[in-house]
Image (tube, rainbow over all chains, first blue to last red; front, side):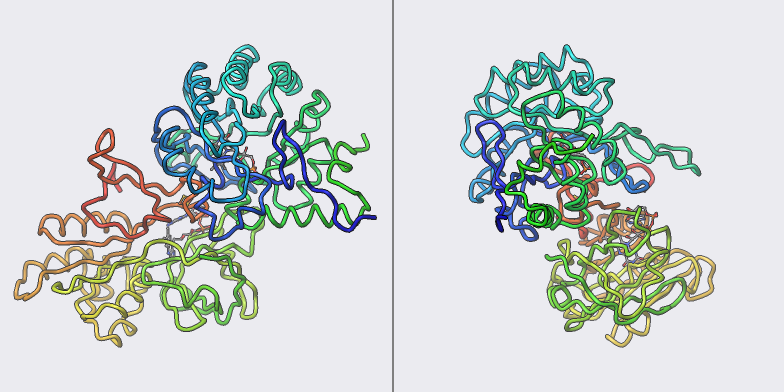
Length: 306
Length: 265
Ligand SMILES: Cc1cc2nc3c(=O)[nH]c(=O)nc-3n(C[C@H](O)[C@H](O)[C@H](O)COP(=O)(O)OP(=O)(O)OC[C@H]3O[C@@H](n4cnc5c(N)ncnc54)[C@H](O)[C@@H]3O)c2cc1C
Ligand SMILES: Cc1cc2nc3c(=O)[nH]c(=O)nc-3n(C[C@H](O)[C@H](O)[C@H](O)COP(=O)(O)O)c2cc1C
Ligand code: FES
C-alpha cells in the first residue's frame, strides 16, 4: 500500500496537482480568498465568468438562502476580457496554480472572440464555456439547453483557441448524455457539470420574488444528489474527463462524484461557508485513498457498483 | 482576515431585545478596527448554510463582543449558544470608519444595532462630540452608560416617547443643527436602518459636511467574491455615471456623497 497516493489528474494538455478546483463565481478572481486559502493548494482556480466587455450584472437582491441551498441571480457582472487581463491576471500569474477562465457571450461570435483573446495571453490555462448560466436573459441559456446552438458555441470556441476547452453543462436538460457527447464530438477536452438549477423564491407577505431578477439558480448541498445522478450519466456517455460540482461540502461529497466517474471536482457555495473547504477536501480524498489502499485518485474513478 | 474557531465566554440578555455574545477570539479580536464586522457561522439549523454578519461592539485584548437581536431563523438559533461552545467566525471584515477630521466635531447617529457598531469608533475618536440614538421604544436605546462613560453626550429619541424625546432621531438631529452655537463643523458617523442613513446623508450633503455611513446589505461570502452585497456609488467615469462597490469589502462605511440611493430605502 502506498502512503502517498497520486492525486494528479489530466484535463487535456493540462495536469492538475490534485483534482479539487474552486467553481466559477464562488471564488472571485483569486485575491478575494488569498488571505484565507493557499492558492497553491488548489487543483485549479476557475474564475468568475468573463465576456468581451465589462458588464454590470443584475439588480439586488442577488442571492437568497433557502433550505440547504442558495439561489443566486448575480447576472455575471465582470470587468470584461481587457479588465480581467489588466486587473487580475498579473496577480494570478504570481501564484503557482492553474487558471481556468469561465467565458460567456451574448452571441455565438462573442464566445469565439473571448476565446481567441484569452488564448493569446500568458497565464490562462484552460477555458470553461459557460453556456448554462440561468441568470442571463439573452442567448446564453438557450446555448445550454438547445443541442444545436450548444454545438455552434463549442465548435467556434474550439476553433478559436488551442487552450483546453471545457463546456459547462446545464442541469435542466432532458438528456445530459447527449450534451456531453456533443461536447466530445466538437473536440472538447472535458465537460463540467452542474451549473446551478433554475429556481425561484417568493416572500409570502409582500408576494414579491425574493430576487431582483425574479428567478435564479439554486446551488449548495440541496442540489448535490441531483448533480451526482447527472455526473454519473455524463461520465458513462463520454471518454473525456468530467469535472463535477454541485453541493460539495466535504471530502465525502467529492469522493461520491469520483466514484460515479468524475476526474476532478469543484467546490462552489461551500467556499462562502468555509473558505478552507477545497484544501480540506484534498486531504480527505488523500486519506480515503490511503484507507482503501488505492494508489491514485484514478483508481477510484468510476468504481461505482451499479 | 482569518477564520477562527472561537469559544463563547458569555452570552446574556443585554437590554431590550438584544443579547450580548462574548467570544474568546485571540486571532481576530486584536485586529479589529472600529466599524469592522465578523461573519459568524451559525451553529444551527444545519440547513441555514450562510454565515451571518455582525458588527464588533467591543474588542479588548483577545475578547470581542457583539450585540444582536433575533430577527430570523439564524439569529434565533444563536440564542441557544452557551459558554464553552465553539463558534466559527471570519474576520475582521470591511473597511471600518476612517480617522476623524482634526477640525470637526464628531456627531454619532445610531439606530438599531448601530449603537454597538459605533462604540469602538466613539472610544477611538480624539474628540468627544454628541451622540444621537433613535429607536421605536425605550428598549431599543442601547449602550447609553457605555457612551457616557467615554465622555459622550447622548440624546435619545423614541417614536413612542418612552425614552428621551418623542420622534425620529433625525428630528433631534435637526433641532440640534438649527440650534447653532457650534465652533466646529460637524462630521457624522452613522449606523442604522438605510432610511436613517439616507436622511443623515441628506443633512450632511445639504450642509456641505462629511458623513460616514455604515451600510447594511445582505451578504453571502463576506469577502468580496460572490457580489451579493453590492451598492451603487457615483462614478463619473462609468457608463451611466455609477458603478458597484461591495459593501463587505469596500464598505460597510461609505461617505454619503458617493452613495446612489434608490427606491424607498
Ligand atoms: C455589516 C453588517 C453588520 C451587522 N451588524 C449587526 C449587529 O451588530 N447586530 C445585529 O443584531 N445585526 C447586525 N446585522 C444584521 C444581521 O446580519 C442580521 O440581523 C442577520 O443576518 C439576520 O439573520 P437571520 O438568519 O436571523 O435572519 P433571516 O431573515 O432568516 O436571514 C435570511 C438571510 O437574510 C440575511 N439578512 C436578514 N436580515 C439582514 C440584515 N438586516 N442585514 C444583513 N443581512 C440580513 C441573513 O444574513 C440571511 O442570509 C449586521 C448586518 C451587516 C450587513
Ligand atoms: C454566487 C454564485 C455565482 C456563480 N457564478 C458563476 C459564473 O460566473 N459562471 C458559471 O459558470 N457558474 C457560476 N456559478 C455556478 C457554480 O460555478 C456552480 O456550478 C454551482 O454553484 C454548483 O456548485 P455548488 O453547489 O458547489 O455551488 C455561480 C454560483 C454561485 C453560487
Ligand atoms: S458578501 Fe460576497 S461580495 Fe460581499
